[in-house]
Structure formats: C-alpha cells, structure tokens
Image (tube, rainbow, N blue to C red; front, side):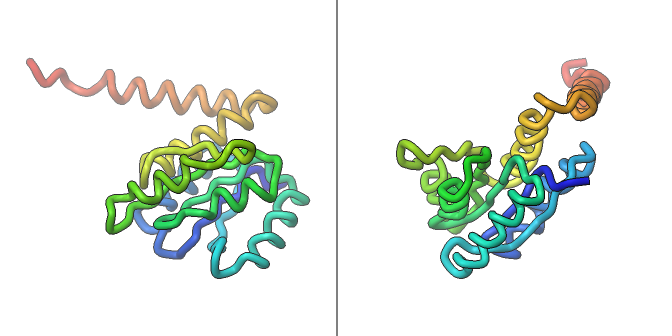
Length: 162
C-alpha cells in the first residue's frame, strides 16, 4: 500500500494529546499514512528531502502541525502542489499566535487551516479522508460509516431535559 497522507509535526511535543488523534483517525479509516517530526526552522534541508520522497511514494495530502511561528505548513505548501492542511498548536498564548501564522498565508501559497489543537488534528484527518475519497469509493464508504456512527452516538445519548 502506498503512502496517502504525510503527517508532519514541528516538535515531538505536538504528539501527545493532539497529533496522536490525527494518526488514530487516519488509522481508524484505514488510510496509509506516516508521521514525522521535522522543523521548518531547525531541519529545513531534511524537510525538503522528506517532502520530495513522500511525494515520490504517493503522498496525496500533507498535514502539518506547528506552534508559535507555525511556519511548517507554509513551508510545506511552498514545496508541493498537493493539498496542505495546517493545524495550529496550543501555546503560551493559547494558540492564537499559531492560528494567525497558519491562516494568514500570503496569496498564492494556500494552506487549509483547521482548529487549534486536538479538534484540528481530528478534522485534518477527516478532511484528508474527504479529499482522498473523491477518487476512492472504498474510503468514501468508510468515511460515510464514520459519520453515521457519529450521528448514532449522538442520537443514543439521553435527552438532558428529561
């Protein structure tokens, strides 16, 4: 099975409680993916080499999470024509700095920006799945089943007003 989604983090600390949920969602949907820690600032050459290699192995979507200056998604987007989904990480400033750095890309180099933290990580995996499902009927079925299971879980919850 070839690589479909490459998940990148600027720091190993982005994994626990946040990016692990992106990988778990991709795993639950049976989407071939891999996770790497590469920094736009500290490992730019290794990042560029990885991006070329991941594309050669079939990566169709890149997910990039970073905090603070949060340039990882922007640098990834500058090096690929594939969709790049940015996840701002929580910071001492509540993640607003990361959100603004990710969402305020200059015209011409788009980054799809998700919510700060865990919700963004899960939604990035689901958005990557939706992108891939346009040409993969089996994945579309798994994504549909995921959404139906979500709806069933909500509908099964007792009404709090009763």
